[in-house]
Length: 85
Image (cartoon, rainbow, N blue to C red):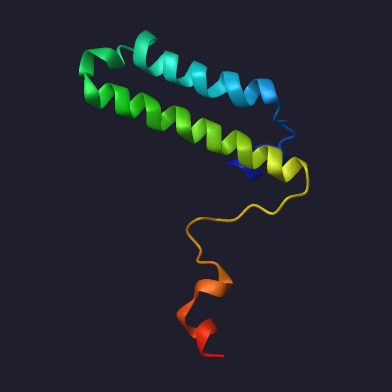
């Protein structure tokens, strides 16, 4: 989603990095009644806020020309066949 937002011209800032996850947590836990679900609502609100934080961080990295590593792909140095060579 960060690459998609970058292509659409969206920008990241320090304020967005702090406020966007906090707003996502507040909205999910308080405004949408996540607190009524107890621990499940708390964890769900936290996970959604963490997603927004990670997306904003990746967008900031893309804006500043830093490579964004896909956590689903193994690093080339950690592949089993790379150690044999």
